Length: 107
Image 1 (spheres, helix red, strand yellow):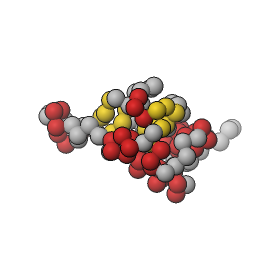
Image 2 (image 1 turned 120 degrees about the vertical axis):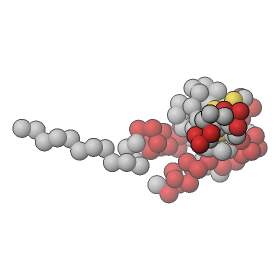
Image 3 (image 1 turned 30 degrees about the horizontal axis):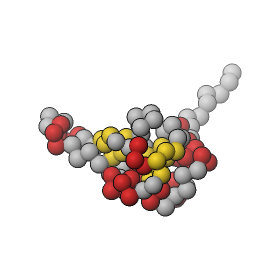
């Protein structure tokens, strides 16, 4: 679990890390791709929604699915299908990070 939390920090504000990486992986669509395929960046500060030109645009956007959950190999985590699947389960399925709601009793 600690690895997943540590890795999650590398999915935002990661422009320098992505640009220094060779390979990237997306925790949303589970695809692995060359880092030079990342050409879009997001990053709007919600405190300045009325001024979109101030967006810092330093979070990688996945070229395959458009998600903002890309990690580069420079983060130090193996971008294997298993690891990306665990990240997906933790942050998108929310079965690791948050407990599923209990099922109501039958009867």
